[in-house]
Length: 284
Image 1: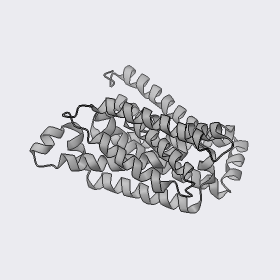
Image 2: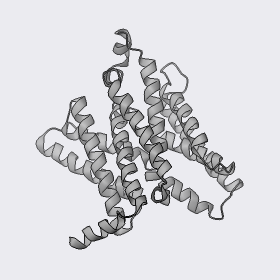
Image 3: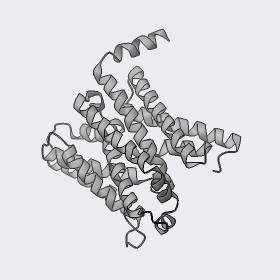
Image 4: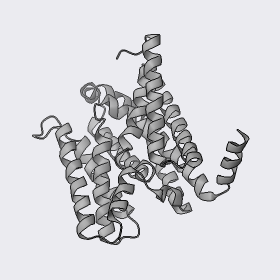
């Protein structure tokens, strides 16, 4: 035990490790808040779709040799989120089909561009690190941390300020509209902050694993709790604990950061599922 503490103390003497932990906690917290809403609105795959869009945007930024990928990635992902989450029942292409169409198209286009206009000698390595999380999470600069901090505070503030509106839109959008709530406006808000979370989480867990970061804590919390507030709070705690545990395990055993965090999320989900079945609190 003392050796583990000494190892962690040694690693945390480096600023980039402290930056990684801080960013990981912020991303996990933001993901858990929106994850509950997305699961209840039956839009669980939005994270998957938007992450693939972000991958395509990163490919375009790489081809254009942009030093700051955010200039393209964030606007493109936000616009895609708006198009996906604002898709109504009157459209010819329904929500799940739209997610599949956009996500697969963006993923294929991004990979094609990275191969045709490669600026790197290791395209396969770049693609793999983008899909499954990269070492860039360990090379965060102070400006990256501040950007993550500002966006995270913005996401959390919006969620807290409009908690009751988001609650009503989540459970019964038609009734919310009938009572005067501007449901479309709050759907737009959910779309924008979801896109922001996706972009933030790209470096931490990679584009293919973002859905697990958003969905697993919410699903785990729903196995044991049934009120919206209790699920939100427990989901936040689960997500942050799993992020910290995943990062620490990654440091100690040299495992991929993103995959380790997701594995921790899945393990906690299984534990909560078993507890829910044993105590009779889980309905499924």
